[in-house]
Length: 288
Image 1 (cartoon, helix red, strand yellow):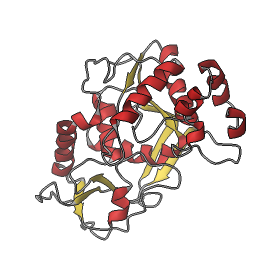
Image 2 (cartoon, rainbow, N blue to C red; image 1 turned 60 degrees about the horizontal axis):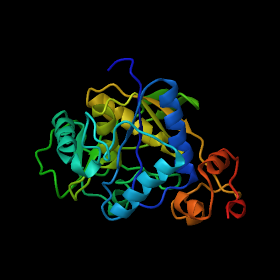
Image 3 (cartoon, rainbow, N blue to C red; image 1 turned 90 degrees about the vertical axis):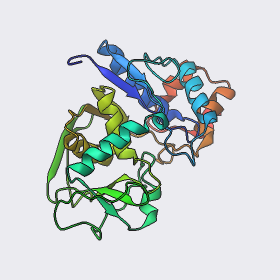
Image 4 (cartoon, one colour; image 1 turned 30 degrees about the vertical axis):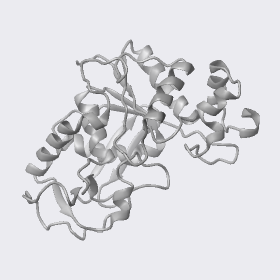
């Protein structure tokens, strides 16, 4: 697959998509088309408490209406099916066992609150708290504890520099153990964290470039460590500037006034919304 561009759209069906999602996904399609490559749609639905079939169907419908097209996905199939994360559990379990067998993971019984944040893609202000290392063993150990019923953390090398050159924002660097700590890879309710599921899927689906929001740069550092530990080549990354409202606040799914579904119902055309997506700050009043 060397030299063949493969990009992806990875909506999480926890609400209706808004203009910020649309701009990022439009950028992903534009970059895939410019490279003569393939665009994959993946349904990131592991957060069962918040995901719904209604939001999955709405995302597909809204993205098609906006003019986005993909060549592989849950609705059309493809060589790397299934494209719905809840149907890919055996692959995540295999990655977990590989990481545990190489001593990269250890069981952790600390604080539930950070675990609640670890399943969906984090956003600005919602990052996984820095872990103080309470359950961290003094040296690499291969635990034989049961996978379910306990949280599992990925052990980072303290003071290791993790670097990559972003295709949009330029050189990026973080110091493991200082900028982020040991992070959750598997939850005690027997589900992979966002970080692990995302890295596994991007690796196994042959993704060569990930286009996503700048609020996920810290996740990229973590996922680069997972790629290395799994013996996989990481994709390139293109982090888009975040889209904000007129007050400079990042758009979120709870802001229904700027959801694609609401704007469609208000009579906006795809062309008008594509133009609005590139405004410096979206004014809700002007979109009503």
